[in-house]
Length: 179
Image (cartoon, rainbow, N blue to C red; front, top):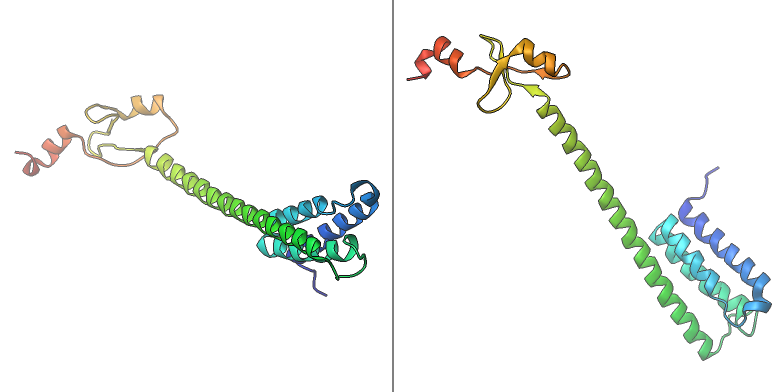
């Protein structure tokens, strides 16, 4: 047995809730039947996606026309009600579009956050490497400053060590490369 997807459950459920609440509140809210259906479209768009928002828009339009526009329990509506339903549909589609754009923007923001997190991890890895002369074991702490390994490690014990040749050892061990 397959479980219905959220793109189906959310719009049907939200439109059913909007219809039930509007029906219960009808003596107090008539002739305005659309406010709770806008919420159903918005919730469907935000939590179910574009397809769910479109489904909620279509279902809401049908339910409003059938249950709340005279003659009730009929889809035979007048021109003024058709105009109201058209405006409801247009605003609902715009709401769906805004929700879809919001979802795309949040997804893009999450991608950027993931990229920045990854870049930060790479920067940390690179900054944790320590240039060390394999001959005298001094470490480069800046572009021009070299210090003894033990002294440096006493100050910063959590670093990983890499190799580099200090200028003095380079001249001594590899004189052919220094003139």
